[in-house]
Length: 313
Image 1 (cartoon, rainbow, N blue to C red):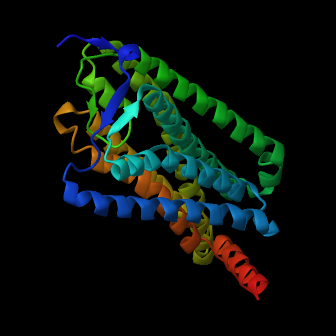
Image 2: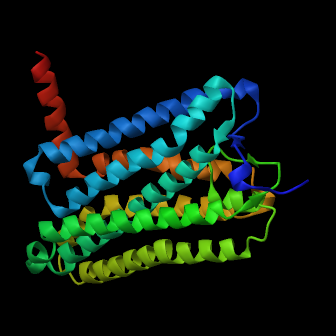
């Protein structure tokens, strides 16, 4: 089979989660429901934070941006998957594949950096409470979000550059429901050693560094909590971190499994399920975790819903 450069390929084929025609309606209904729940849940988080002045602080500011990134993250992959199932057409154009790669890493990196900023926020709030308002001032928070966006944009452009240098054979069937760069590396006919090295470097910088910062933050937080003399203070301090810690474990746990699975050619087909957990289930669960485990969000949601009900009457 003659290699064909990516610029000569007009489309790829996304094989999806299942090739069984009888399962397609079930998959369509399931992912459509999860997509709508995710968008609605994260929009409610954003509306709740913006409508309640008591939530106008750095922690909820970062949470709102995390919810916005989650909406973009799931919107990058699921709508195309639903359209392919509905039209019975597995094709995605060359430009569409590049756009998926770009937005996937843009919003995925934003999620990582916002979770890191939230860990730093909890570190300052618990370990340096007297300096919290000075350190976590509005200007610094806005600057942190802006820097996170530009770093995420940089990573996404580096991944596009990496994908654009690949050479493929005529078989361009991607064993997933979106254009996953590790899967594209596995399909390439040319030497991918340089691309693989770059991918691991990007993973170390944009994945390893945030994880290290989060681990450092929580080690300091745990050390500070253990020094609290009364149990009520320990519980109150830990309760402010429980929601964030749950989301961190869910996001990085599923992300690690998805990346490891997609990087192994022998299990390429099986990697679609971990990828779905990472790209679809995690953004869907984040609003539930924060709304069920956070008193401020629950109070704001109750006010928002009651205000909506009263306005209808």
